[in-house]
Length: 92
Image (tube, rainbow, N blue to C red; front, side, top):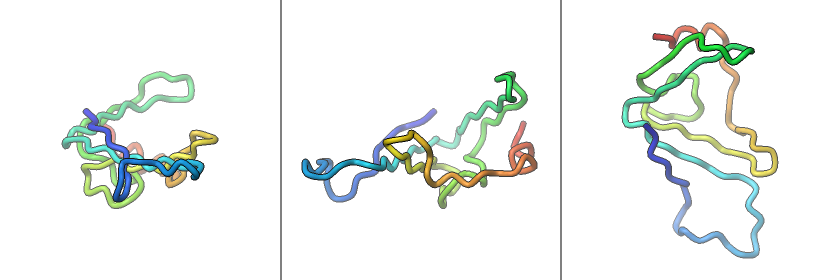
């Protein structure tokens, strides 16, 4: 379960004269980060229902998912590609 919150600093207003280029998203997983792993054909290969895996970006303490998303491309800017071994070590 995710509880979503857009992390804004000091205000909930976006300055009208500024173009938004990045969305910084922070979500608390409530100690139940459910992840389903799929292969290249989108077939189920594994699952995790636990804390946020260590290979996720930022210091999340196992509880938070924090992504910086490029508005123009939808790409996650702070994602560091994990190895297959890192991913597979988190399957349950």
